[in-house]
Image: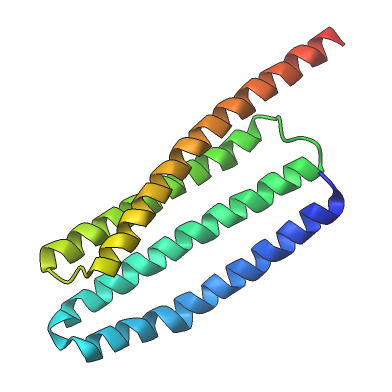
Length: 158
């Protein structure tokens, strides 16, 4: 991978992490407060909503940090070492956790009876995308495992 592509990706990851941090500090609490002002009967969902939303954003940030580390391994030409599986496994777990957070939120909103059609669609989309990403990462981890084994076999031959 070209150095410029890696630097660009790392820059974008840094900016995205910073923007997500700003959302955690400013946007999420403000949106939760607006929800309470619009629907005071749902005020009891404000704190859990903030916790789950911030948790989801933290999941995204952790996944981005792991991708950053994987890009560093690519740059150093050591992606096919065992430590790369640690980062892939973390991303896999984080994507699964984020999907479960969306599912839990969806169930909670449905039980409370405030799941509008747009919320139902967004949660459904999040669950499908999260499940698809989880499965895709499982496949990619298998490919990484095979490539790592091939590199070890080739190193033994040479």
